[in-house]
Amino acid sequence: MNSLYHLGEYILLMKKVFSIPERWNIFFKQVIDEINKLVINSIWIVVIISLFIGAVISMQVTLNIVSPLLPKYAVGFTTRETLLLEFSSSIMCLILAGKVGSNIASEIGSMRVTEQIDALDIIGVNSASYLILPKITSLVLFIPVLVSFSMIAGLIGGYLLASFSDMLSLSTYIYGIQYDFKIGYIWYSMKKSLVFAFIITSVSSYYGYSVKGGALDVGKASTNSVVMSSILILLADVVLTQLMLN
Amino acid sequence: MLDIKNLYKAFDGKEVLHDINAVFEPGKVNMIIGQSGSGKTVLLKCIVGLHFPDKGEVLYDNRNFMKMNKKEVKMLRREQGMLFQGSALFDSMTVLENVMFPLNMFSTDKPKKRMERAMFCLERVNLKGAEDKYPSEVSGGMQKRVAIARAIALNPKYLFCDEPNSGLDPKTSLVIDALVQDITREYNMTTVVNTHDMNSVMGIGDHIVFINQGIKEWEGSKEGIFTSVNKNLNDFVFASDLFKEVKNTHLNNLEG
Image (cartoon, rainbow over all chains, first blue to last red; front, top):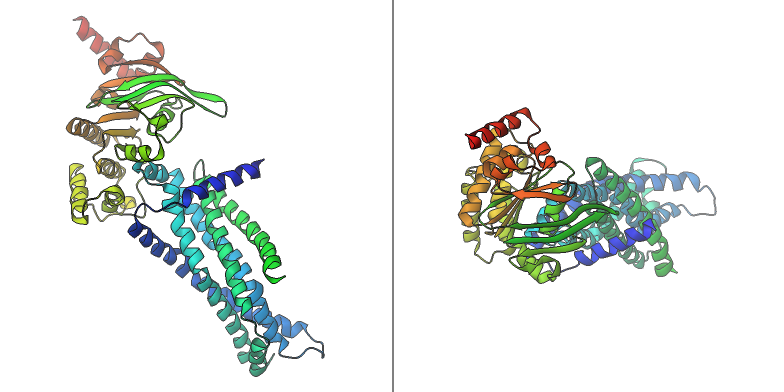
């Protein structure tokens, strides 16, 4: 019953969110601010994590695939496929659910408990649309940029491992990451990330917007938003993989 | 004029407001008083439309708020200004941007004119020079004054204040009270102030409504409080020795 209540409230909130902005110039300014906050400020974490994960995947594959039947270039090939198919979209969005999602929930939640949202309503502004639509728009539009950064950084991670260790040769790694390359996998990853970006921003906003109480409740909302976004991302991942790759 | 008729509100089956009736006239500082938890904040939120009453009517110059469509509510919002208990200033905006906000959203004036209006409002609350500061960089009293400037930016007909003096020292409270009273008179606004600060009530209250456990128990002028026989009102207003003494002096003067 509780889940159904939240689902209903979430749908009603989204209905309020998707309305024409009061002033387009203010909306565009907000979108630019949100791109800076949610996307640009996330690039460093995306790049660092992807760089190390790319290197670790290459290392793990090199150390664990010992069969003489498997070619050496399988290391580069497996690293690329793992990054493209799962890591750079799904796992990266799980990480973003933690960073961006908690940020959104606590920002909107704090505005709720300090009556700033009530103040917006009294002024006559559609507070849901004013606060949430720019966040959804900016992350959905620019998540492909973060996914691209993640893919490139991950592949560079493997490249650096090949360059600075004697675990595998650089030429074999480069051959592996080019072997049987399917461009469709990039589009698949991008499309998935759009759905995940919507989940992160809308679910976190819902939890922040519906906070009741004080600072403790803002903290709870922030945690709940991360947990729920993560679950929904994984669920959507299964559904989208079935739909798009099957 | 603001007319409240037979207002009821309950949360999770617990009745918070029971059959509230009141009339708030323009040009007067109307005060809703009562103990903490008496239902006065819920009443104010029902009046401004932040809560939807279960039953009853809220008439803004004979326009029933409960029956308004979205467009009408939006139009009415421009006639309302509200000062929140915690000021509710937007943290990410400067003082000037806070006052400019309603103008930027709804005014059709050119940017220069909007800026002039915002500066006028800031000057009106004696905050010239603080335009570029953020809410966290100014004192509680200044935050309240910024909130008043933001509330009057669109020239509202109705001003609502939820415990405007909470968290302020007595001297700053007097400044805020004087500002609310002056603005009410100046613009002939219908002002409704929610408070349990008896200094404010005795200082600027023109018309007082006393709420106790969700029921309107008394209404009248501040002078009427001294002669009221309502036990709950007397217990609430004259709880302190100071106010008991004030009451005795007042009654002695009347008898004398």
